[in-house]
Image 1 (spheres, rainbow, N blue to C red):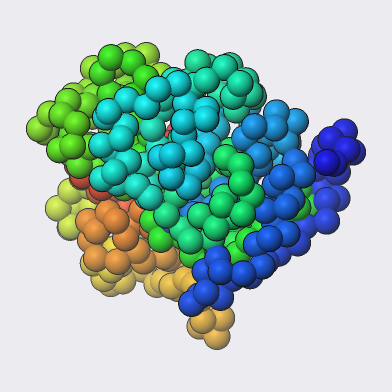
Image 2 (cartoon, rainbow, N blue to C red):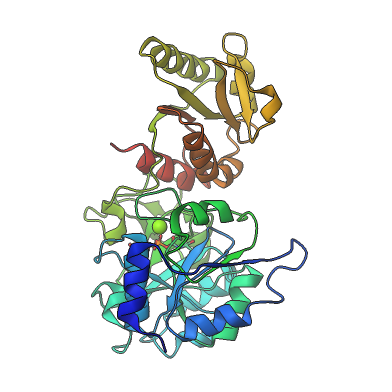
Length: 384
Ligand code: TXA
Ligand code: MG
């Protein structure tokens, strides 16, 4: 076991010895993870890749270890963590009764990007759940995450591995930017598949409530368990059996500023392509009038429209093409492909920040299905 006071002091000063473990693209998670698993058991912090975003992990049953997560992230103490396990059987030791709906949902969508909020057993440390009577649990699909949890032999509490308020990390360099010197290990598993955090569904009360939209959509969930509601912090949706009638957010995390780039983020609201391109153009002209440097995050179609009037430099870039006065741009894919936009969003915000832009103009997509998660993150990132 480690000296927790000393470890905490090193996190605060950013002087922890951070070790990076790189996994090969064809060999995700099959080696080198023993020492990271051992570190988790000793009460240290380990960053690991998941299919959604990178997680900042600690042994969920060790309160002192979990406290280090809050220190390293600068996370408010009232925002609870997700506990990661390798299968449903692992839940019994700390979840107080697994409802049938949870079994059905995990059978349908796990391992994968679905988190369920369930009633907890008393021995789950308060620091994991921020004092709540419930605990959020997820069974990640990424092979490195699965192997790490298995080797560690303990449930792993892990929020996204970013400094609090910043965009969630979907590449190892994002984690290095935020947490180098503040964690013991960073396991580099390449780019995260989904790029947005898991869907969080609360099953602890009478009616299931989506607290945070993600890749597993409201309609997918309601096709397995029937009625679901959306939390008020979630984009409204009228279709099918999905209702939005909860007035008080049940998830503590939703009240904080999130995902924010350093630049000011503006949304070009969705609409017909010429109208939406017009919104981009108006923002770009305004920025140039105010002598502000702008960057854009958009589809290939919108970029095609704008190219007639504006000169772009596309990222990730070819440095040779760098010319004065070009607008840095990240293209996510084809217009309204919200899955592609979601995968690219957080990386784009960080890339554009690196360019030193004052303003980022990002493409809005009409909500419904997987666009809910994308627009939820975009709106939060754009909140002043
Ligand atoms: O995809 C993900 O979920 C990633 C990866 C690492 O698994 N994790 C993640 O964790 O996004 P974090 O801490 O950034 O977001 C967890 C969210 C927060 O909004 C938090 O408030 C909510 O889940 N949450 C956790 N425990 C809860 C509980 N007992 N009741 C209600 N909400 C809870
Ligand atoms: Mg987070």
